[in-house]
Image (cartoon, rainbow, N blue to C red; front, side):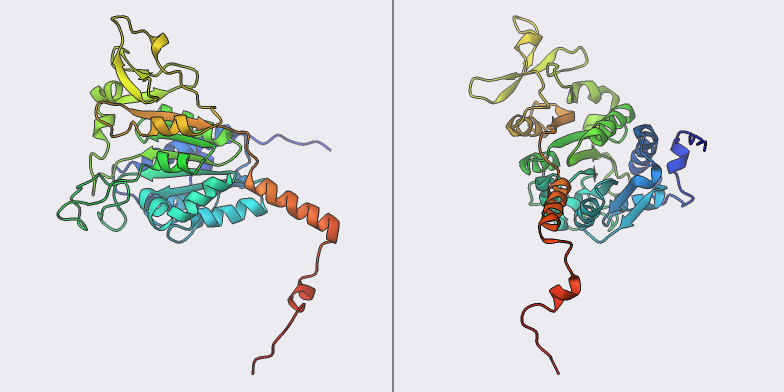
Length: 342
């Protein structure tokens, strides 16, 4: 018997015949293109991918990916994805969600999925607004943001998705930007290679209801001056001339310093994405929005030494079956006290 090797997968293999129905210019297009480009490179059969989404513009994603998928209800994608991964650990389960879907109604599910270290990859599209429902403020909208639901300005302090994920002790946390295509693809590959929960915040624009959401980072001149690219084992350096950096202070905090005049790269923080404790990554996550600090992008944390939730529970089930047998559902339902209701 001879076998014929299947041709390698391409981006086209992950595209569907569905009309992509996002607003022209939406950042979702760039993210979709990146995912469809990366998936063929992972060496995983197409039928082993499952895309799970909740509700929101980003949650149309399963329709546009030629894989298995579920379009679930608002905020509940992590719960459905956990059920899939627990029952089929062999599948590659990806959750696609938005800042409102994941951090408002779905905040509880997101937090516990990450805490459990379920082997799921989470892509959180953050445009700082509710786009599908036409422009209300979201959990990541800036303080005092004027929107349709906050005409006099939002009174809320915004959620920091990366800080939330690190606080839940997610074992992989990263951030990228929709228009940073090369960086985004590299980040997606790193998330795919991670064993446990992988959380990727993707900053993206909503040109209809929140245009310019991240122009302070995406404008050509801003990319070098306002963005710090995290690279494991390398000093935290940024700036058009790579003349600025991040240094530890004596009190444990961090500060921005100008290189030169006795300050060199050897004085700066060396990025350690593999640190077993999340405190360092949490400190970096709070650079965003801090006056005078750049916004970090890249992998904040990648620690792969914890067991996955699905492996733990399946081993537990295996041991119980080995000890007590496979069980009988009918016997279980008829066990104990029963009542007849007339």
